Length: 222
Image 1 (cartoon, rainbow, N blue to C red):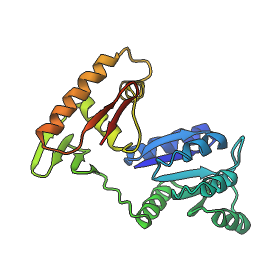
Image 2: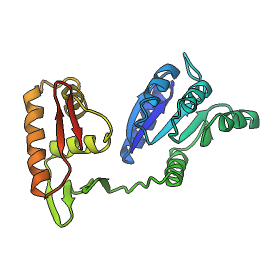
Image 3: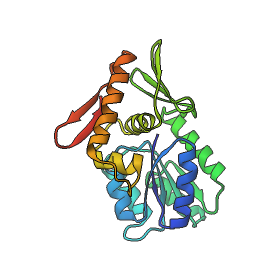
């Protein structure tokens, strides 16, 4: 599940990101309102966690802009403000929930589960599903109907990255930085080799899912 975290306190953002990732959210973290708005407008997120007190553009304005642009993504507001008036302004501006600081990570996770249930998204801690494939996060097994095969660590990381971004094109630089790390000396041909391995394994389990090459741009799961 794709989550956008807009929080300008770097230490808090990093801590929340780690907790969310451990709970099977794919997290993009940004630190000001302008970036929050630009990322939110892509409409690729299942939920947005948005602080109100942000540099460049405050969270309420980000929220209003997203709703004015027909972005219906569920949004939880985070803020140090805790007055009834602030809550009313946030909810009337289009927020789905409101969580005052300080809060426990467990409460945030519970609110995320509740808000995604209301919007028809259910989190299973052990699997990811896309079309006719199921990816088991514990066993690294990918299956389609009665067919299954175990993936290597890198194959697993790559297909998981694709499944969590079904609407967007992923380029090779994205894959290298996210799967191997920013400081990696991995080259494009390494990525191509793993994409080839994954295509063969998808064919082996007789899945209709394909990793399509978008010429001179990247790859997309279809």
